[in-house]
Length: 315
Image 1 (cartoon, one colour):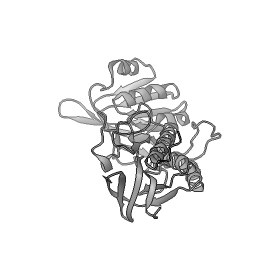
Image 2 (image 1 turned 180 degrees about the vertical axis):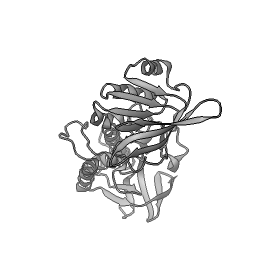
Image 3 (image 1 turned 90 degrees about the vertical axis):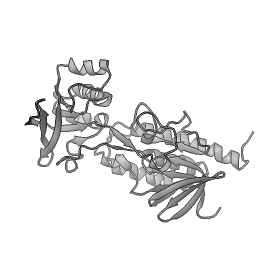
Image 4 (image 1 turned 30 degrees about the vertical axis):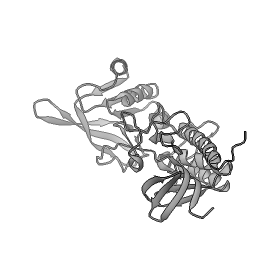
């Protein structure tokens, strides 16, 4: 097989992509992983990964993803750092155009993930991982018996506020509108929880601290074209104002109402040979373990697809 031709190309070197790379290469598929950044994705932002089954005590995200990368390489997967400009399908082959050349494959996995929508306020970037978080399940336990802020008003924000209320001394929800956009039952649970208070008609203007978050400044809309500022002391701030799935490489794919790629349980899209896994895929729960599971399933299904195309199916 020519050096630029593969059985399986994976775009994205996060938990889903590297899991797929390990399973595919171990199964004998010539596998290439492409990412414009270093492997890891959002996992690199995790200081203490303690909720991955069997991995205890906790490790930092960089160490975890480093082990995944080395494991995939040990089984023969190739990993390159380059940007993808376009993807085409001609006949049975996918053509992946990158800044370092053209690559061809019988199957393709989109594991490009999703990015957290940011507030883009002073202090957010500076304190990420030091009090600013985008995952209550991941980081909530580190704020046990402390005061935290939740920003957002949808189902995710309300669900995470409820979860944090079981760990933290107090949770303050900051929402820019006068009422939650979450489902009624979800919103009512938040409003009736004695450990949660809500600042409606408010937006975060700044996140303050020294070595870690110590307070936030919010701007409150008074409803008469006036506004006031208020400082709220806190130990952490959890931001849930939406995710942005990275689907720009294949816009024609079917997506759900939030823009995530729709697949079946085999991770297959409507395009034969094209799979999606991890946070870019439409699903109810996004964690490292679910991304890894998606990747393993996609790799297995890609293997079946490749062997059928090569007439290597054992009957």
